[in-house]
Image (cartoon, rainbow, N blue to C red; front, side):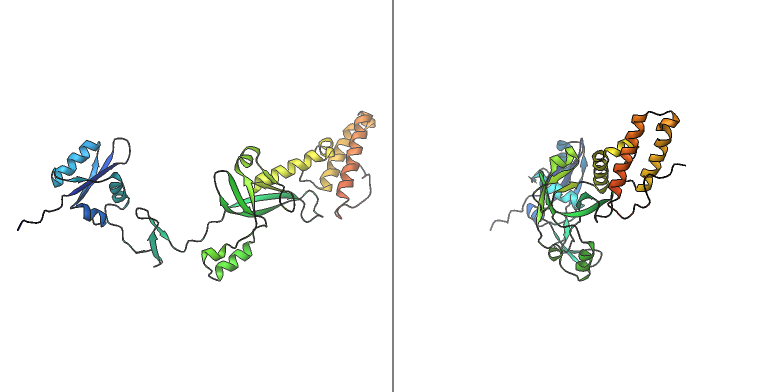
Length: 287
């Protein structure tokens, strides 16, 4: 009876950087496929030197395996990954794929947002900018899909306290599509398919700056009085008093300039008169 032929040792190597190659050897190809611990491993300056080093350890009669086997072994520290592992809290984890790293089974979705900025909400807060967060549901290279309704942090926290599964924490809601290129190049994206015109921004600060600049450009009296949003009726009064002293004809100013300042002040007071914050009579007394 002929003796059973012993399976040849297995060898694999892969590049891990410029002038650096990782090599690893097993007793057989079956041991490599079974994720058994390697016999030996190391690093060399070239693929040829790595193969020579492996042949020195197990002999020239060896079977070369694809580089992905060496790459997998290197990621695992030269040890066979366990089929079932447990994290620090004692919960089981499972590999993402055959060659992937373990991942948590109960990972809560990471919250990311786009921001929507609008002028004065509620309506009586003139010059106020309200910012709401809208949760990003999914995104790809071209589009970002966000929820129509603002994010409710309290409801999200209540769901987490009830111990609901990750899939149940994210209910299905109506979404809007935001173009990535427009958002990146113009700094905002206006969505006109919603029940109202919404402008989305990448950050809260960008939304506030854009709306305040639009308010300042919208009201001509801001440039005449030298003010910008956010401002108040007291700020307008202070600016008017300062300009009236220098532009009044009795102080050597031009009559046309003084009339322009007065007209801008009237328009500003008419704007702030929409709120109950403005009191007193016009024009104010100039000290």
